Image 1 (tube, rainbow, N blue to C red):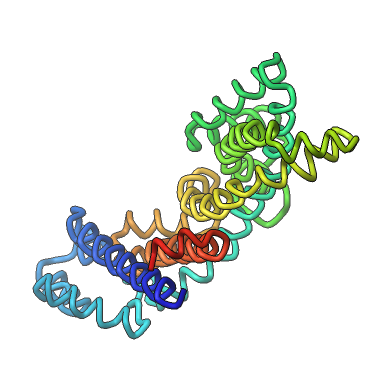
Image 2: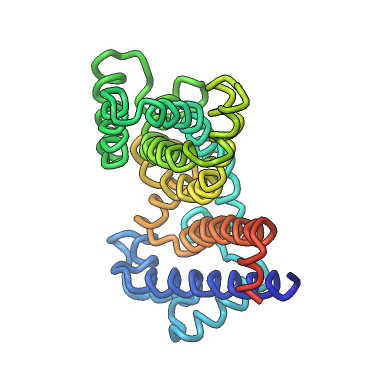
Length: 308
């Protein structure tokens, strides 16, 4: 088991190195010079050259990459060109807002998705099942940015019952939460339905029925408990996806999280903040995947043996 854990940690570090390298290369390929953007169109060539030297942008690309990697190893993620502050500190200040939005969306998805999936499985092939399946398919196929705009037009501009942007009260959280939760809710409905249908005819479920237990206890205690095992794994992985999905939702609703900071920083070529933001999201993904892999190793010895 020790070798399995060490191997997974090594692969995780390799993935993070790949993410850091891709972020660095892509940012340098994007058109636009940070020095020009910071100084404005009235700056002359001497001013631009002086600022590029100050930011280290006049150095060869490989030297910039080596300096960046060395700084990351020492947990120095650079300063924001635009805000003149430590990049990672700026990103971490926005993390609570992003976590709040992603956690609320996850909770809403669980509270609605799981019961709907159970109902669809218990009424399989009926009009109830078909109706839930159609709505879940629509929810899974609906683009988040389009849904967000529609919700703003209906509830903020039309009915005027909810704010269209900003934060601070629970009402500001409603529309972005629904927008972020709907695709994951649809996935949960389909996973719960299919998982429950696979186990509902298993021998241990039939045995529970033969003992005279009520159908509710048979489903909730015996069938659903086993059907939840793959769902728990998907929930863990999807939480990372929810954090990544906030980039679009936070932009649409002007939510002050990491996603909105990232989009603003890309537009202004603020390399330090963009690199720190993406590196943080990549680290969260890697940590969640690592925990899931280690949990598999504990739950299923065959996975551990395969890893060894």
